[in-house]
Image (cartoon, rainbow, N blue to C red; front, side):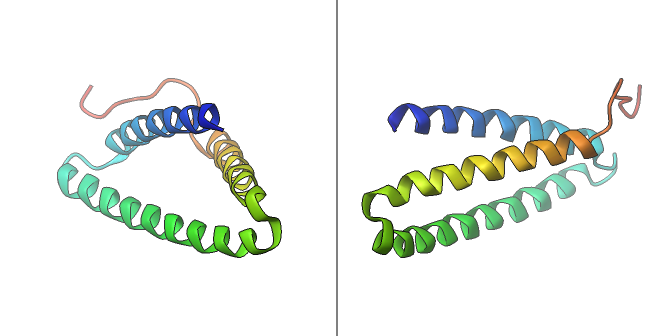
Length: 102
């Protein structure tokens, strides 16, 4: 379980950097800091909400599954990550990225 948590943390850090790079390339040249600040604030609020939801779901699962509830939550988390990756592969542009100002 600790290995899975370490791999999950490393993947989360990498996806966070990749997401910031995508936001930076996609945001308008004027107001770039405002755009990035708002997206960071919204992302933080959603992350907080997801952690709270996971806490409540874990408590509910613990009543029926006992100690296996954490494994179920990690499985659900992994499935959500794979679905997000598949969505990104389908929706993100392919080919050479044209940066503004070049």
